[in-house]
Length: 285
Length: 123
Image (cartoon, rainbow over all chains, first blue to last red; front, side, top):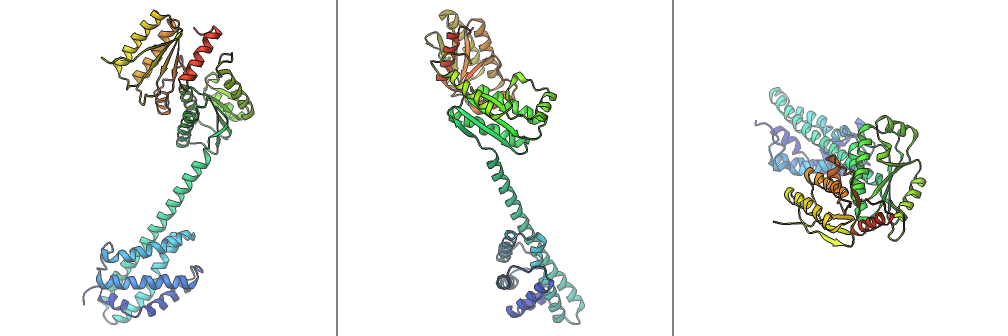
């Protein structure tokens, strides 16, 4: 008897019978009170039909084959739905792997007394389900990673707004922890905004920054220098006492950058600077 | 050989850089500019680099060099319209052009030069 035949004959049973046994297994394992029973039922029924079709045509040894595409897609969509509900990868895998108990006991009935073929068929069935289960895990994991990356991207966008409180003045409030990549990205955003808005003064408010290290301080100075090269003046405002101490210890030269304790003071200075450079008014800058 | 044009505008010289700079062009500009400053007695130089998309360390240094030479000859230099990417590149190269004044565009650059001239503290 060629390998896989017993597995096929088990799956040749009416889908309903398989379904009932599987559902019973899933609910008795008590892992998932939700989703509601009928959703679970229809998903399981669909998967069983697809498995039947795949086993009838395809090679159970080769799950990457074309015949298995529908099965893999079905598992992927179930896993995605599971991931959206916040289930863990192992819970998603359990959905597939829980078919094992039914399959093993059915195989035992099919092959009573032929222990050699029984072992082979069990091994095969086990391999198939394990790999399908792993596929579910991978899909869930992938979904989670995508969601995390999306949230990160959204957060980045939310956390570096450039405000324009006055013609010619930009404010970049820095909120939350600063890292290398974020600081570079903010520098780029700020410089492009300076060019687009023709802003003469840019205020970088670091009031909400609680810690700063040497790398970030250097990047901050570079931002100020780059803005100056473009013809805009940078004022760094909202420097807390601890940050001021850190900056001093890091050897930041206060002459290199204009600083103000509060955003209000920086804004007042910015207004002064703008008036000073208006054509026709006296006063050097 | 290509030359970068130098335009006279009142007491100032305008240098619009509209082509990609290469080393020889930059050196040629420096020499031409020095001659022009001496010939015209210009009080200020405005270099418009808004069309410049890339700079290397040599061009960056040459610009700084032009500025300090011009100051010795009695003219203040303003660099106008530097693009964000160019600014970032220069800073990363460690060239913050400390002796050079900068402006967002030609209008503001000229206003800056006029203001310096009026105050009498411009070189």
